[in-house]
Length: 413
Image (cartoon, rainbow, N blue to C red; front, top):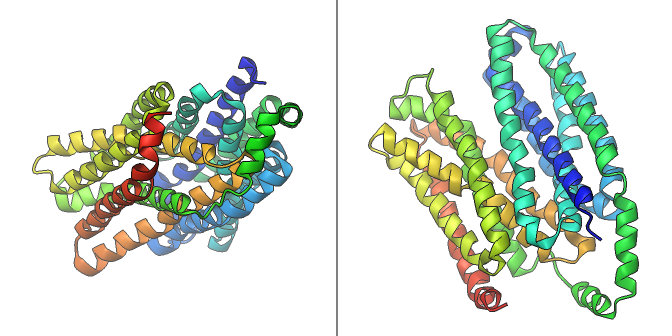
């Protein structure tokens, strides 16, 4: 059922998908001043709305996209979605007014909203169980690679070489179309493989019984609602740091403006090896999955707290590196595998769509709330405390609702 070429090609294709998405997400951030000038001195709030429109659309698409993927299949949804993604990038690149910029951002957000459920339901279906968490970590690492390419690429080309900002979007559109072709080549046999698996299931009495028993699985059980909240807390801390850490370091830790980009990048850089290492360990010790999730949540909470309390730059560096190693990028693949294994195959994309909907809702709440707190109190420290407390509450709920009930069973499985 699982051929080595098949699932490895799927993993490579999905890595490229995240690279393209995160290049788009980060390519504009370093060149906002150039965009403001080009659009007639737009305000900071108007420019910030570009990202907000994208994430509203992206988050809103999670649940309907999951239903579409479960009904029509991943390839059928992915190909037109990424063509739409390229169109959105071109619309944004050709923009001469803010409304046109928002339309391009809206199209891109709606299009990429289908990716999460498609990607991880594909890995759940085609990757062998003993390699699933590591595969999800590899796929997820594409986001960090795309972030680095987007941030550095736009800074160098536009800021250093004076390339027009529009050309960054045209280049991104070409990358997106290239990734779409990779999807077409590497995921082309998805329907046939699914049909083969269904046929095998029909001839196996045990498999029949499992599917019949799993049909009653609720996506809103106490266990799933707890996992959704856990992911909201995990993403809240991450998007708060991604959005506000640079200004927090300048305003409240005394860092120079020229240094904060490198310091903030420590989280993304440390995240890749952290995710891969923990995923490899967990694939070999699947019975300890719940214990690792709980441990990672507690460590991530402590590191965010230490970022606020750090009395010296070196302690801050250590806290950020450890947050990168044990934070969102390390927790993501473990939670994704846990969610996909907790539901029958025909509900996988729906479950992952709900899971990511709650996680990405934090990308809308965290940046705004932390900024609002900074505006009203003159300090963003309370905003960081909220990220810290949410993770501790998530760890407590996970322990009470899931770990105490399922932990002993999984250790003896």
